[in-house]
Image (cartoon, rainbow over the protein chains, first blue to last red):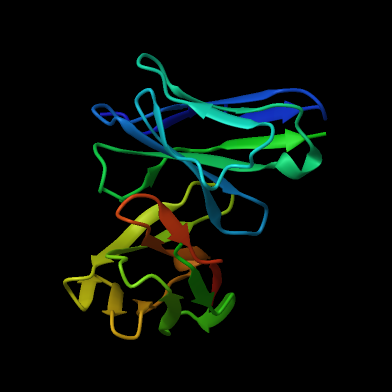
Length: 114
Length: 111
C-alpha cells in the first residue's frame, strides 16, 4: 500500500507563472490536508478537502491560491501568479475519514520562485 | 482556533544525555497530540503520539507526557544518539481534523 504521493518533488517557477502541485492520497483515503512550510519554520495548515468538497480553507490565502479534490484523480493545489514569498515546501497528508487527525505526510513539493 | 507554543527552539546535548522538549496548547477541546521528526530536506515523520485519555506513553527511548489540566505536553528522548539530531515538531488537533504545529526544536546531539 503506497503512502501519500506528491509530485513534482521540486518545482521552479518564474514570478507571475502558475504552480500546480499534485497529491494522491493513500489508498482508501478520501480526506486530504495541505500544509505549507516556509524555510526554517513549522508547518502551517492551508486547506482540508474531502472528495469534491472543501471542508476548511481557513489557512489558505484568499488571493491566488485554490485547491480541489475531484471525484477522480489527485488533489491539486494551484498557485496563480507566484511571488518569491510563495517559495516553500508544500506537504500533503491524507486520512480515511473525518475525525482522524493522524497525518502521514507525502514527500512534499519544494517550490522555488525565481 | 488552536495555538501551540514549543520550547526550546534549539537544544544541544551530549550523546547519551536526555533531551526534553515542551509544548503548550490553548484549546481545551484538543484530544490528539503527535510529535514529528524532520530531517533536513525530508518530510515530517510521526514518531509518537498521545491522546487525551492517557497521561504518558513510551516507545523504547522516546516518551511523551500529557497534562490536560495545564494544557502542556512534553517529549522525552533518553540515551540520545547522533542520529536523533533533527528538527522536532509538536502538534495538537483542531476539532479532530487538521493539526496546529509548534514552531519546532532543532536538536543537536554531539558525539
